[in-house]
Length: 491
Image (cartoon, rainbow, N blue to C red):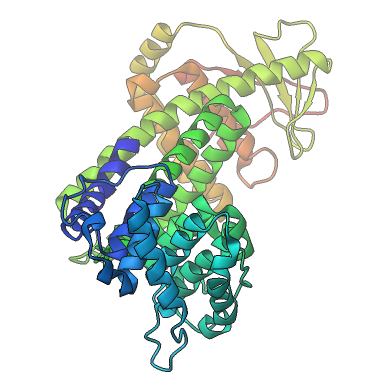
């Protein structure tokens, strides 16, 4: 399963890596931001960086360009070393930038371009680490600019809030959109911030949504092909998708380990799975009944369902035998510990004969009816199967007669009886299911179903008794003083 999930997303990750490689340029703030994304997460950029233009060869005149200033800032944040002359030219460029109008009406300032804003912030933070006064002009811009971005798109707000936090300017959280309404770029950026800046992510309300963000990101990538806009968004998507896949796989693995190691977890998981299976069954039944050209009309889909059902039936049979055996063992222990009395539900009490071995005889009395029986557990599986073969015609006739009788029962009891009879017929016809314990479980269910509450119950029960004898799993009547004899069966 883990390999299947990896393969589903592998082509998408390769496509994003190819985009990053094709569009990488050392002077581009977006490409430098991509490098910073991987540097902050202690991972590697997923391709060999092309040796295009060495940023150290730039003319000093280029430091009047904001994108170049930002690119150097990212490089400093990633640990790259530069000469003193180079850094002095860069610092002079920052001084000239600090004197410009940072909030023009046409929004052409670097402040409104978050990848440039972050690059410059990172550069100043690293270069002037011991001289905080040199960064005051940028802190003032970030403080005043919070309100100017309050209505901006989520991507711009989150990335700018992260830049502000680097210089200890704390922006307030704003109302987040629904996770399903966030773009894939927003989801990727949110996941990255949760990974590298958990305190800020908590303040902005992202940490509480991280699992939902991961789920929405994976669902989006399953349903849609991703068309990235630039290297910055591509890098975030690559990181977030790969991290979400890894964490989801680990979560699945942890849950599997808990299920395997904890019986209670296993039962809870199995119950949930059965409930989900029932829902899926109803959905498939509705689709199949329409017999439309869409849906499941394709022969391959039908064959796949049949194969899955075969495995499910096999697993169900194994569990059924194991659970029945476990119930039988636990019931014996309970009877022994409680001196022979067990309340089984409704009006039926199970009492163990004190003069007989617990493993050989169990008596069931129904106080409000005329029915009681003793189950005997003798014989081998080989003799049992041989006995069925010798009496198969009579067994089939009795099962068919019981089906006819069940048609007269109220709806709930009728459906339950027919299910038990179908299961019994299948067990008899399938050699690997032809086991005394399984057959006995079916017969007990049929026998107790009609105990004293249905018209025709005695006749039905008598025929179940006769069927049990033909099958070699005898159910013998006990006769308490207050319990009248059952009338003979009528066929």
